[in-house]
Length: 51
Image (cartoon, rainbow, N blue to C red; front, side, top):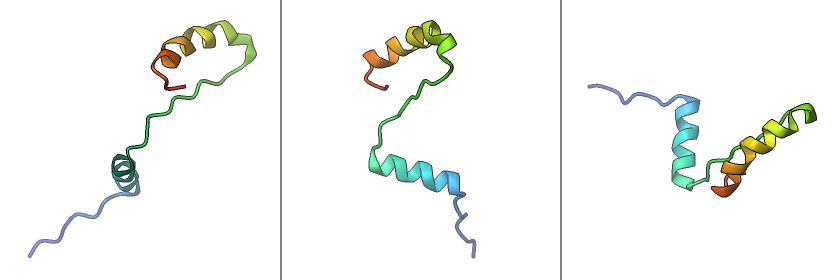
């Protein structure tokens, strides 16, 4: 008789997120020294409503 494989905590979390249909969240953070680069990176994600 074989036993089912137990899921790792990471696999359990991934399964729970799938079941809850949680949206993917992207966070952009960093020094204000790189504000131009962060704004450039932010724009496409904002258009996709992910930020």
